[in-house]
Image (cartoon, rainbow, N blue to C red; front, side):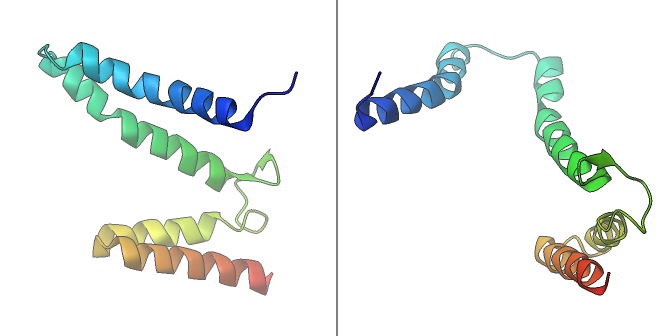
Length: 107
């Protein structure tokens, strides 16, 4: 079965748009309880943490906590310290990319 590319693009747009628009339509006239709003505020942080930690601790598809094998451990700790003390996203990104590049290049 061959689909028209525009039909496929339109279908993908609808499938992407509906889960974002329906909650806004349903909840726009309602007041959300404060406990639910507080709980929902943690969702972006938890998703970001899951993405970051799974990338840091898995090297070549295996869970690796050895800094001599997993080159992402020390640069990620260094980047976390720099981010904590400087509170600068740009400096943190530069330190993270540079330190990871150096670790991979030197080994």
